[in-house]
Image (cartoon, rainbow, N blue to C red):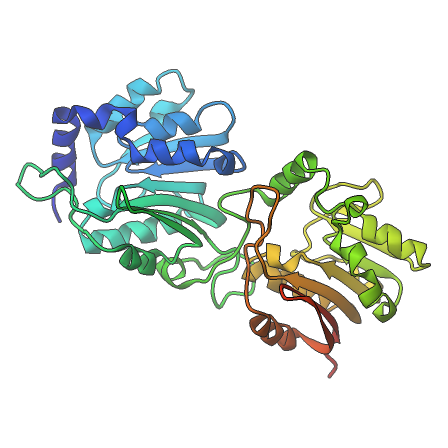
Length: 402
């Protein structure tokens, strides 16, 4: 293994460009992702933090993060500590790495960033670093990083190119299997987001068992990159009065009601009730109905996570869940379906097109209806499938018997 500390101590000392924020790909990336990152709370770690531009930015106003940084170069960490000397506890949160091991407990961070670092490592060291970054991420945590897909214009003190692993975007995508990736052809740089599944492959207990294989092979699961789902949707509801509002004909639960009303047996629970207007309409039709959503937008609706066990759901005879499932990743869908199995009848719709109007891509789980139908049949008996339009399907189902 090369002496990375020797190499990058020399770079930090001799290359003035390394000390300029405008030359920092990480600083550029976090600036562009401010809105997304502001939705994350907890601890963050910037791997290969250099002189601390990312750590400094994430320690600033507008973020709810305890920001840590780690780098193999002790000279870079010295400079980072000077840069962040006015940030409380920054000295102890800037760590000199010894090899590829990260000196933190399992599941310690909500966010791990790593910008234009991995290509500086030999391949075997990349594998170790990926495994370590995954280890310290909590289930549901977010990886946000970038890699350069070209040779560096700089050689190290031994005459080797600083980019020791130069590969195509496809190669890197195969290694990380990101939830979202963007390739900048001008900079020849790939930017990646990846969320750690709440449930690891083969694990049905809700947490635990995450490893390097999870990082490279999972099809993964969750809200949009790094965002707290409740905070994100509260912001969307607050800033977009039309969103999910029946008064603007934007509530699919109300709009589709004639298609599923006769299928329902009271009492009814609306899972992901939004503004509560579908529940209001059900009550106007004489049905006993309640609603639950992660965001409180109606004083009579309950607040809760519909993907986690709902203890009293068995007291209902029907559940409604309209245009919510496409907002959930695979493990969350399975949690929702487990809840719905406690109820005799289900009416739910799925929209597999792009979400529009809010500035966010909220439909994070877009599959073909053939794929959705196959999954649904594993959990429910499909009584009727109703095509609302090319991108929206309504399913009337019942719990499996026997």
